[in-house]
Length: 78
Image (cartoon, rainbow, N blue to C red; front, side):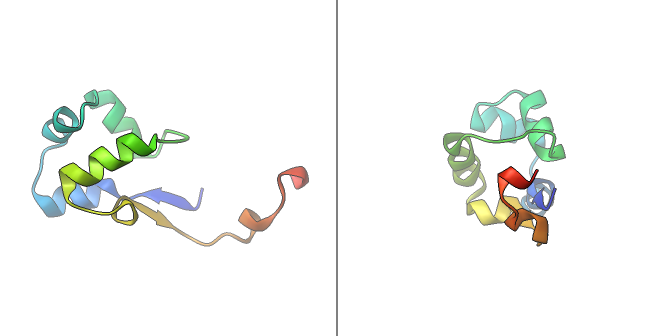
């Protein structure tokens, strides 16, 4: 998938522990770990906002995108 979760790099840059971030944001360590690994299919905007508030960042700091021309195909083509 061309959308990448870049949360790990931000956690390291900020010198935080994932356990502390999970507690601050109100997620279980497992939920945060699944998001960090990219194993989730979606995230609630509220959770994204809480992560951004806790990390003093913008959503674009948590996610990256690698262009894939298949993203422009219609759902009907799949």
